[in-house]
Length: 177
View (cartoon, rainbow, N blue to C red):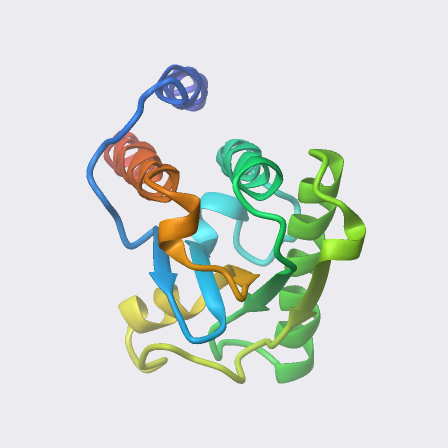
């Protein structure tokens, strides 16, 4: 059993060279009125109740930083969200710490600080019903919004980002079962 985390990390490294696995709900790319929204579930970025970015999250940040430095120069809003389990103040603090961790990760990868802002909304902006496990999972997310940007200006690299993490997350789920 001790070999499973090492195997998962090895696969993550190997898969980072893959171009376009199938799409997933763990990373979604959406055009909104505000701009291009890159949404990541907490499965990729964080352990439960933590604000330290996991290894898969580091790869995610590598890819997002590449998009932000090479494909667009628009401002970026990083927004953390939680489900409704636990005290509201704790959830708001956790969502803010997670958004800050993502911003620091992007800053470390060359995205200028002047282009980024972060905010933690806690449980105040759910996108799904918090009364179900699936709904709570969808509500635990980090959104990176490239403000005033259009998907078509960035290109297919966005689809590659979502597809890559679909394969990684599914493998991890299978490995741990």
